Image (cartoon, rainbow, N blue to C red):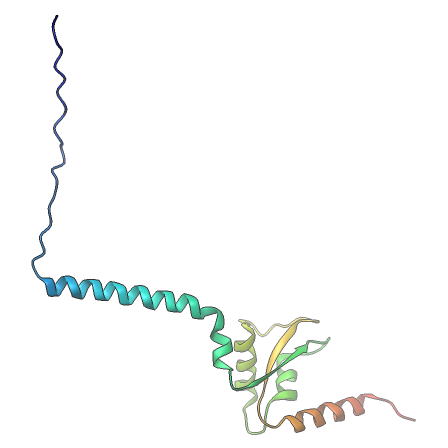
Length: 135
């Protein structure tokens, strides 16, 4: 009986070996890679809390947009004395993640309140009184 000899194909891709030529360069490479990974993970974890940390010392008021409201009129109502209205509009847009100055009726907006809250409440009362028709 004749035996058949099966020959296996020789590996066409030779096994490659790597040698560490410089331990310093290897440690530097590993350190840089780990720093990049830590940086990317920290960005991902903090991205949801960016607004909360930027406005952590400021009181925020949630308002409902009414018909005819614009960012300009809302900023005019709630901005503190001495603050440019354009800067305050930018803060409102940044706080609410708005890219455009377009707002809609019944939309909820967060508005930062700085220090002088009594003036804001008095302005709201004065605005209400001007709308009420008295005999």
